[in-house]
Image (tube, rainbow, N blue to C red; front, side):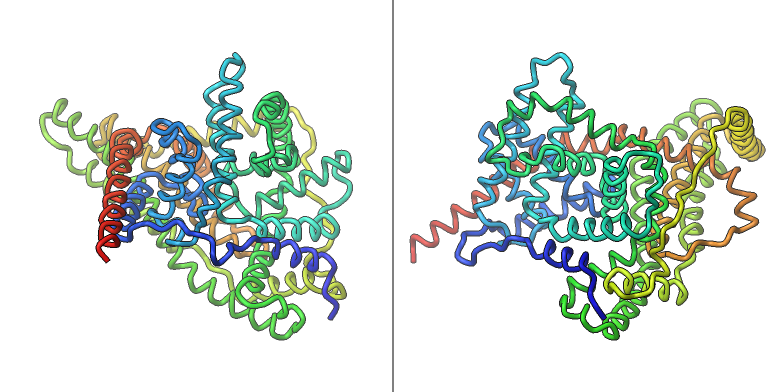
Length: 522
């Protein structure tokens, strides 16, 4: 069968990664010191819940902020940053060359240079400064771990969906339509956070930022606010909400194809039978590992909620009981401790995994992506869901939603009151219920990453959804807002991390000193 032209483009793009010359010196750290740093980083990440693919990027941003406080030279910051990343095992020992120090220092000079250039501008805020540091972290992360393969995959999905799937009758001009499809493909495939998405768009608009050694911070500073506005306009465009859910169910065939080509060889695409066999095998492996992954994510979520929210809540509930009723009201306390993990476990166990029908659909989609002469069954032009502009119905529905909100929380409040919950224990229960429900739904949705078959409506869930939705939305709001008030992260970042990393640096230098003395004796 004939391989499609867009697959040829994808294979060319994914091969553009640079390799380190074998004779170039590498950054190495003491293994014992690295082990201590690694376990510290693991402990810190427990109290700062985030998606696994974003942990390294956020660690880089955190290190940049801390190192800029105590070091003036960008080269010193760059070297310290790279050593920390190796110590914490974000990169294996001896896999980063010393040549990266210069490249990372250029990136820091560009973005921190913009911060310095705009420092006196009244429109420049702390949030803008954080954005520029986040850009620096994203740029450094991509410099150390190339995104060439992933961005080639985004281009492949864009070429496939723009030409064959997304209709051309979107109510917008052609340039905006293509931009929105491209951005949606990037978000669906790589699941970036807000900073990574903005950095991706920055690279498209201000390409010189990808060549930090050539870029002028003052020139970038002149264009900073206008570029930021353009980026924000793209992200807030109304087609985002239409395209994201529409394209999300087409994600998995691209991910599996990328995995097969990366783990095997691109020559496998020339053998349709072998490709089919490998896709089926990979689907079975993914389905089998998904249950374990669900357990792992639910444990991480519960430990995060317990350490950062429940301990503080219980710490308030116990003194309140002792102060108001002179004894501990045990039933509310037991419910607040036991109910959240049980609910999270039930939500995890009830997640339904994909089956053989889904695998068949994925296989057909992969064939349509790879082979130009494969009949189009999956990737056929479809109309996006549209909403008619109405005035009265949205007002009525909003009122009904508020009623359901009051009914949901009112019923729970009545039940808690009958169980002798006081105001504090009741608030804590609502807090835990909302957070756990939101995390549980988010974890269950991770299963949908592998599902291409549109689910049939469930009558029972259709009835219950309106009552659960207010609780989930409350949990979402709490997750995004209360997460900023994380006492444990503050303790780690402000009180522990700076002296701890200084001690690690000194210990590392001590081992280097001892090694040099040994070498002098030989």
